[in-house]
Image 1 (cartoon, rainbow, N blue to C red):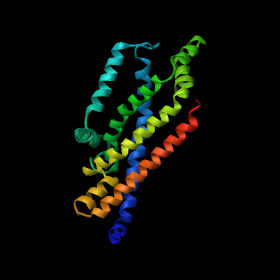
Image 2: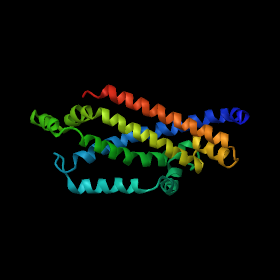
Image 3: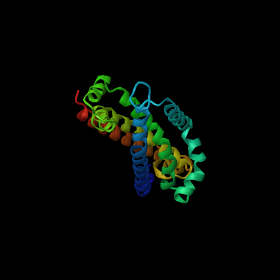
Image 4: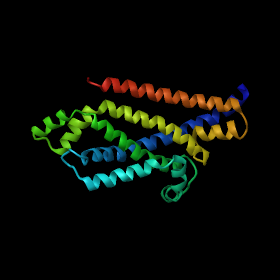
Amino acid sequence: MLENLVDILPELGVALGQTLAMLGIGLAAALLFGGPLGVLLFMVGDGWSLRHRPLALVLGWTVNMVRSFPFIVLLVALVPLTRLVVGTSIGPLAASVPLSVAAIPFFARLVEQTLRAVPRGVIEAAQAMGASELQIVTRVLLVEARSGLVLALTVLAVSFLSWSAVAGVVGGGGIGELAIRHGYYRFETDTMIFTVAVLVALVQIIQLGGAGMARRLDKR
């Protein structure tokens, strides 16, 4: 058992780096595109100053449609797009394309739900003082909801680890691919257990880090 684990340590280091790279790219895409999309979904919803029902319906339908795809199906369906963007459908960089596509609407919904928890009176007070829409978003909504947004990002990061493991099944690399290649195909149960333990440790680190940061940002 120990010999098998020692033998895969170099590969584990590479796989861990690939997983973290996919995680970083996907979270960056979620923040850059999913965050603003979530704010827009909130602002064009019923009862708000930018209310636009047709736009809200289109955005909501699009977000729900992408989220309804099982990730393995989305991964395969986006192979042409992946090849167009990065030139290949294999490897961690290629896997980052469907991971990002899945992360954007997922995070957008989390942002929208988090913003809905902001007391309406706080927003109305800002409007009464003549704050612009941009000021309401940047100085009221995002500030009041910052703790919840950190928790939303934490939930996304944990989900990402599961998605990256699935991506490894079709050649995406990372810890999931290592577990399948050694633990499943070669019947090395000890390797499978060890890689699962690494994933569990990563989840715990992300969850504890996110929860701790959210507590520090929560001013209640």
